Length: 290
Image 1 (tube, rainbow, N blue to C red):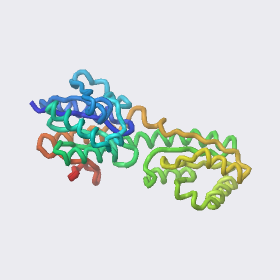
Image 2 (cartoon, rainbow, N blue to C red):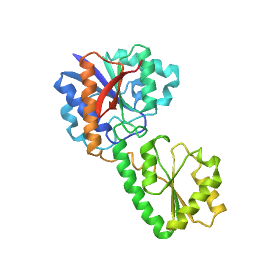
Image 3 (tube, rainbow, N blue to C red):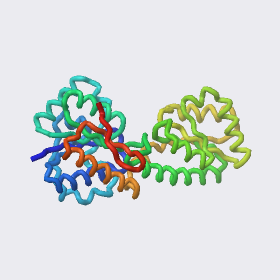
Image 4 (tube, rainbow, N blue to C red):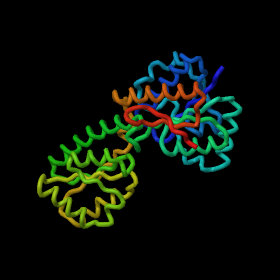
């Protein structure tokens, strides 16, 4: 009987459980044995593996988070760890490893493929707008920003908010623009006076300002102190990066998760492994990893 393993890696995103659910459903319909690896690649290194029966996981379809838990793929830069992962994959006689995660997970899968392991990568991250979880996170983010804006404008304050997502992501920047918020990354502070000038314009027009910090900017408190030292503004700093990773996936992410999962099993049945999935013209396609 065919036998696959599923793991979720990188930081959690809404829709991971939905992907797992549809993978299990498709495995059940195609008579494929499915196993779950706990704690990301770490679970494969330590052989933390459980049997997944579709009938036992009917309730996870719209549940936030991941029942398999997750881990940081950066740990597996270490060659010794990687060898243990490979050994346990073969000991358990898996035919293919289904990896749910982001860019770091993709890189580990690529290393495993180079060692002869069959992998299919399903994108579930906040760093790309074609990934499962991104749309749900964006909905939650906009809702939270609306509430913070109401508070900021009522008290005439400058509010600094740290958010997650790739710093080059156009959709996040568009959200900033639609809310008259300033987007700040490491590059922005190379011209601090420009930032202060923009803040002054915000105050001149609406008596408040909102600054969104990219996830790679780690000096939020220092920025708060800098603005307070150079202006008369009252400044508040909020880190909300983990508040919109959880929660139930929205309708778009549920549909996308289903389509990705079914495509992944279709590829597996056709023996077309070592692929990652992506959207092109609203259609799920597979791209060779190597």
